[in-house]
Image (cartoon, rainbow, N blue to C red; front, top):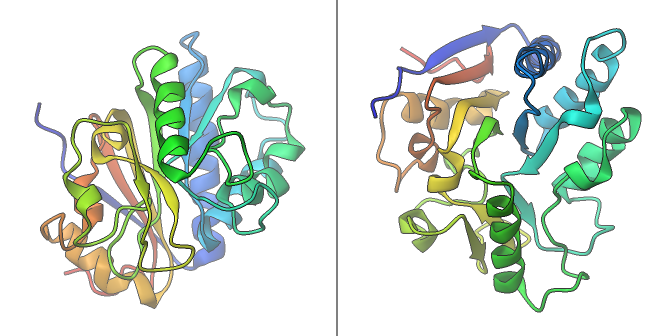
Length: 245
């Protein structure tokens, strides 16, 4: 099935970007819930995601969102202890999820290294089973950042994980940035979504953004390997968009 062309939204600065994306998140949740469906949303980590999550919590006051009917997932996670401050789930919980009335069983954190699974491969397999247990394994929204090297989730340029097409998750044992062990959704899982939203801020992301939107090979710029079935949006601040032609 052909997917629509990517759309680009540029905001002036990171603060404006975070506010704009947070509003869009809340709008989407309201729209999906108005159809009687509990939206499935895949979250990401990073500096700009942290700002967006904080804004979602702040802006949700007075919005028609039933947080008890939202399924929250993660695109990737560092395989570190559950209390490690670098975990994406912990950061989201701190500034967003602890401030709204979410149902704990609908918050699907990836396993931590101090959990019940023996090693990162078992942890990845367990998360795949959890995704598939929800039925179709399909999402309404996947939110992603992009690294300066073009990586997305924990799918890094030139890695063997880029060619895994028959699994929901992959274990990463030797990530080129710390920590080396991670769990990530695959391209196949990330692409089973209505919408993909990339969010990038800062000059350091500009080259990767330009190459991704220019159609680079996914083995060089993995972000090109993820597209929404209905919509792919790139939310950028002015610096991240500075090398677009």
